[in-house]
Length: 213
Image (tube, rainbow, N blue to C red; front, side, top):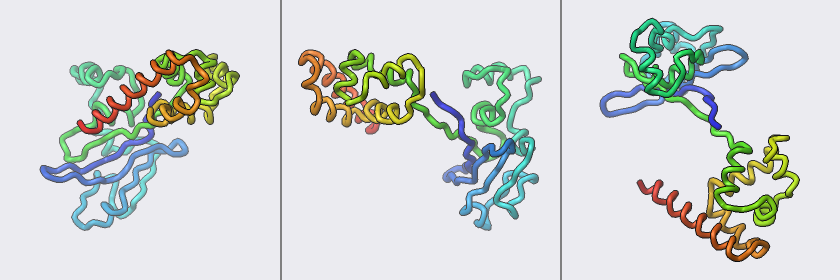
């Protein structure tokens, strides 16, 4: 599951890209903070007249007009098409989300990019276990996790953050999962162990290929 944390702003020219600052929410306020290096560079230009560089941090109860101007009007006939392009609802009201999608590029040289937090959930764990083809008991044996913790995750009875953090490492870093399998794989049937090992090796190969590309 992904959550939009903030919005990073860049000044993109023909042959350069400079980090400008960040837009985020704090205590029900919109906050815009210029990057220190950008703010002290004499060649830098402000985001807009409402965001003078004499101050590094600006706060407002409503979105700054320099950002509001980048969100297309809902009255625009093409508005539904803009939303469809980025797979968002025409009724979406999260202004930071709108800026990271349909307002990402505009007439100015400022470019907006969303900062996303990817959260590992019980659904991710369940998907991972099924990909490995392991039962609850087998998964618990290989990765040294209590069956009761896994049962609670399966039933979504509790978040189990510490357990999920461990499982997330095995999921995202198959080399670590493979190490655990070689260490504790003797606790499951040899044929099952071979299938899991093949899956993890293929995943490692795929991820390495992605990095190269």
